[in-house]
Image (cartoon, rainbow, N blue to C red):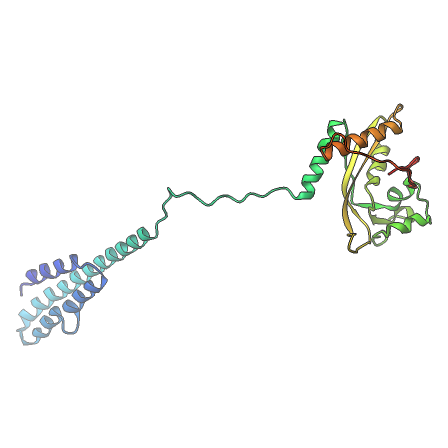
Length: 265
């Protein structure tokens, strides 16, 4: 039995199959229950033993070769379909990309930077301190003796007592003002001193006009020749620079604060 012509015909049909559906039709027509190779296999029973053996060997070889050609073509067609789908979904890199969203400073941070810049021009440096303080640095060192009624005005957030520290002066709290930074700076540095302190402070007060956490800034100048006129001039220069109004009217009035003398607003 000569199968070369059939092999050549089926190979051409497999090679020219445009898609998987056409390739499946070729497979069914060649290897299906009613396929051409299957029909030839059915004729083996009417042959002599010698012819059956030779023809059977040729048909089995043809069947294997056609199956391999179909499998190879199926892989090629799947790759073509994938390439076509990817080409349809490709991105035109020449198009403008979406604008990059960049973060910005928080308004509070912007305001703090502006304040630092103004006072830096006056020769001030920035001093910092911890948010968690003790009673001594927050009250006693600022002329608030233990039991002084002014302590109650702050409605302070006290932390659980630290058993490793003894005495009321070591009681932990959230600082109620940034004056604690001044105390720590004066204990570590000798005059002349010219600093500003800013940061979060905490008071147990919450209503329409108050929040338990807010930001505060204050300054400290210590020198032999420093007097009240310097303080007034410094504050006037600051508010006029901050509001960018050279002739901004400024009013000073006497006031009372337990940790400064004299005091003014």
